[in-house]
Image 1: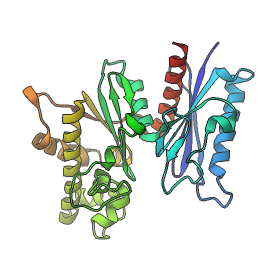
Image 2 (image 1 turned 120 degrees about the vertical axis):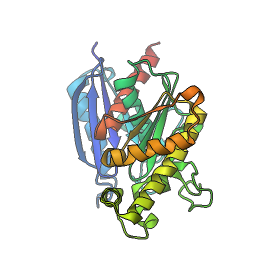
Image 3 (image 1 turned 135 degrees about the vertical axis):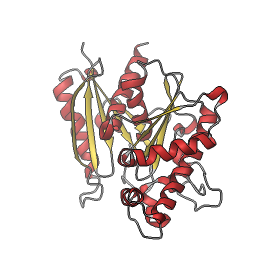
Image 4 (image 1 turned 45 degrees about the vertical axis):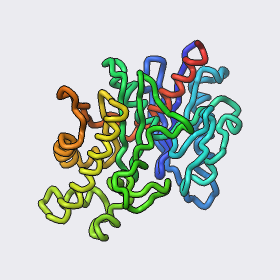
Length: 307
């Protein structure tokens, strides 16, 4: 029997879907608006249930086992990957919501940073023999994921990989996890206005001013990159990855304005025994990484059940 894998990624503005076959080929991808704040309560949830039912009709028909599904979303999931346990501030109704019970079939839940990491690894780096990988997603906040010995590492409470919550300034402002001076606050788009005294509203604006030679912008941007380097060097010393992948809108948009000063700062902070250093690269998958990772996760779970 042919098997297919549906990945759904719930974002703040859009819900993205990907369907993979057994070989990992993308058969289709699509998106709809999330409408998290729509007047109709939890409309986004109904949309996802409808998506699963429609894709099941297309790919599974009479046999629900033919289509496996996983959902990627922000927050921490439970140990059985059945639901999101903690998701503050957004997607009201997702906490404690059991997708499998709602749909009447096995649905897995996965953190979105973990999902993006898994997508990059399975798409490009497993075949290259990479065993240890670290990914950071730089966007509104900072998320991430960790691959250890060729497998996604989620740790106790499925909390591993939330690298944005590490402290890079001990006396900085606390964020949602109560960590002061977090990497997320230092780099994320949500805090740009605060970090620049209201002068810039987005990282894109800040980087554009930096590239045009504005001195204030240079100071603010390089401070963010320096703190990112401190975080990456610390993570490298702890996890010893072969490869660091930087994804998200900030990494893609800033490009050389990020990578060039980051390399300079990494030379200062990274422990490089024998001259060895972790390679830092851009993510390749873009906006559909979360949905693809969810599909790969569904495939992984299916294979584990067969063993």
